[in-house]
Image (tube, rainbow, N blue to C red; front, top):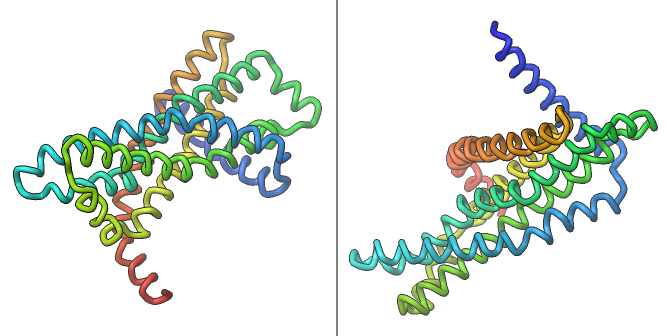
Length: 263
């Protein structure tokens, strides 16, 4: 077995242990509310502008392309439904995860990496302060809490952007854009998008913090770790999104049966 493969397996093991340790530290003794509140503000509130711009512009592009492609086929009324489905199920969660990775994940990795190379984390351990509980757990809680909300906000902005383009630029009737949505957008669509965002939140926070904790080599090492964390997060988001899409699509019938039997 090659040395590179052994290093990869060791890194995967350390990453899994980090996730387990953070969850255990969170459940055993939750971090202070002040730390969580700070991360909620940083990850959630401060990400709203970039998420809004991303969702709004994506919705406008989707509407423009959908109307252009479908109008000559007599299917222009499906424009609103296509925009809403795409934003809620796929593009909203994925693009939100990309934006949060670039804005928040990189900052997390750089901050923790700087603390690592300046031996601040070692000093915390010497004072019996658990870095996982103090540094990572608040970010973990905030990440899994805010990502679904940011995804929904991005999707709403995308639908609004599509509505603006379809109605005010292509002169589509407002009812033609909006009427198909209540009948065809299901709870499962919303559930799918929120589930993906929840998983993406775990990926972004844990990978960024893991790379930060394992930073070596001074300032240059911080830059390398930050770059690597962003690239790895992007790659994992795309791969996990594909796997989640297959899994959620396969479980749709079971979800439908559950709703019919209980509601």
